[in-house]
Image (tube, rainbow, N blue to C red; front, side, top):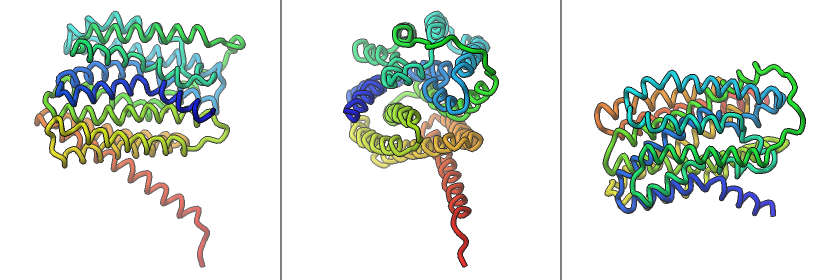
Length: 378
């Protein structure tokens, strides 16, 4: 029964990214690369905004609860979200100058969606064993985008706005219906948990925001089969990553935290994603060598993400931040070169170097730890 519960939970948690992957597979196999790119553009934008605002509100509260009280975590999240909303407002003039029509269309929808999501944490549902429903609601905006791509063959700013708003309505309604506070909150110092939220988001969050921003830029800036396949490969492995997040949230609810469940799940799902990418690629006429390179690129991404997660569990947040900063810096450099040279493979190459840097740091530290722990030999 417990195994079946986890299978059902994985299916629910993975429904939005799974639907996104299935739809993109269909679009790739039917040669609709323009729709793949527009789906990446608006999907990357909504993913970036919601992840930044939510602050990984399932996993991070579970980590914080090991060191801080619930009454301190909740107000710390409110302060964090106010700060993120202020950053969005500061960025608004730039967005208006770059894409006035899209910004004007999306702004009212997104303002209402963020307001609806403001008071709620996914951890409230996690603690009741509803991790799968929490993740389904968190990423529910993907489902109407997928439906629009299939039925209408295009994604517009207005469709993206409706997806954002009505998914937020569903999220708020479920939280109101199922989450009850057992006692009135007590006054607690919110400074320490707020600092830790910012620290973890600085490590984990920067990587997530960077990945979504990359999808947006690739979808908005390139055309043709190769950029579509690059986006497809990234989305396929990202879908697996969301399922791994579900497994990690289960691990964090256990008395003794380990990485066995999520590591095994990530390896299996990444293998399946790689096979599917290889099967979908011939329809776009991309060379076999490039297909293998893209699969290796995304496999290295998942391995480096596991190394970052290990650093976080060990409270080595600075190392996690250093590793992610390396990936982001090299990736952004590659993206800038790709835009100037009109060659998205430059982005792939430089990002791969970043993943190699993270894994090298992880191997070096583990080798050093084993050397220190080994008994002295005569």
